[in-house]
Amino acid sequence: MQSLPDPDQPTPTSRADLTNVIFLKNAIESPLIDVGDFTYYDDEGFRPPFEQANVKYLYGPQRLVLGRFTAIAPGATFLMPGGNHPMIGPSTYPFTMFGGAWQEATLEAFLAIEQPGDTVVGNDVWIGRDATVLPGVTIGDGAIIGAHSVVTKDVHPYEVVAGNPARHVRMRFDARDVERLLAVRWWDWPVEKITEYAAVIMAGSPQELERLS
Image (tube, rainbow, N blue to C red; front, side, top):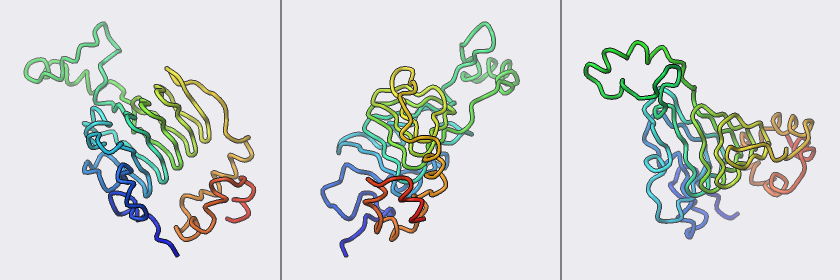
């Protein structure tokens, strides 16, 4: 049997030429980023590390959570809540950031401002080239984000969105089939079973996967 890609290695061990494909969980140091097995970023062989170049304002406490088997194209960017400016009063100027007397005068008011939660990307998501995901967004399992899109709000499982701001294009499957796929959760199968039925996962139907599960 041919070798399988090892999710615990930086790049796929099953193909020596795929050095641009980075299994992200092995390239992350921040405890604020959580990545599932086989989720990858295409750095084209020359881009800076994902954690530094593609995740902005990662100051916490909010996390970036990426599921399993998600594909992230070059230049996709995640803006975290640490870069937000206050918008509840007359000014958006970030006085608190400067420390000293300004921080002392504004810290209580700043901490009282409601902040977005974690940014969460599900399993088997495809994020297109140079897409931008704004703070606190949740992208459901199986969703597709078009290239250069700006995702400002949650994306439903198996929904296709595109544009700036990203808008609904279509659903990949009807509601019943989406239910089937979310129940099957093929990405949680043992890798041996995923390998055996990879052709069905890639080109079969939700009903076939349901039967296999």
